[in-house]
Image (cartoon, rainbow over all chains, first blue to last red; front, side, top):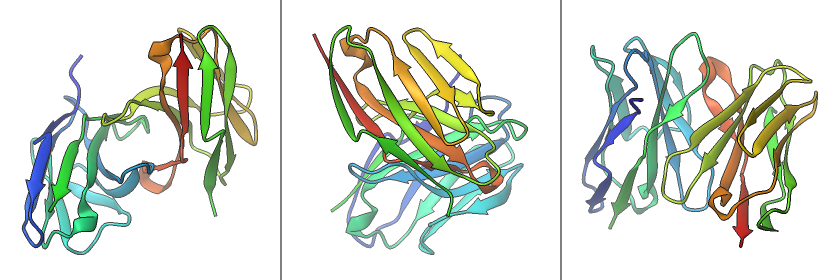
Length: 112
Length: 109
């Protein structure tokens, strides 16, 4: 069965640079969620989209923005990167009528 | 404040030694209690959703149960490949998941 696809899988950036993470949900899933997981921590909700509209927002820094496109893929844009942004970033998708979320393999972001 | 608390933080078992992981919750209007498995550096893998007290679900060596205050993940005759971090979560507003800190399970041959 098709799963959530995330790219890139690994990303190394310098401080103050920008990064763009991409997420392709499971086919026919209309809702996308972004989570951040620091070392040894549980995943923390950042932001979600339903039918290309932002549906909820968590502890996402103002330096980050995201959107969902007409084909339902989503991009997380991160600017003015800081050392503390180094983490695993997961995308999850679901059907709006179901609250069961399926996670992608993640993007490991390292900020030097 | 709605939250979930998992215990123990870490658990070491011998292969074949059955045990249970606990997830205590204080959530008003529970709209689902979720169990995920996470291997190091990988995305959480969906295991179960439980919605009401008394509900049970099984998958291979795993069985999840739910009461009004807690959920258990029972592992029967575990194997080394069951070693992972097990996360429980509840569904918050607009279905975002709020996770517990997880239980790190190590199963030794």
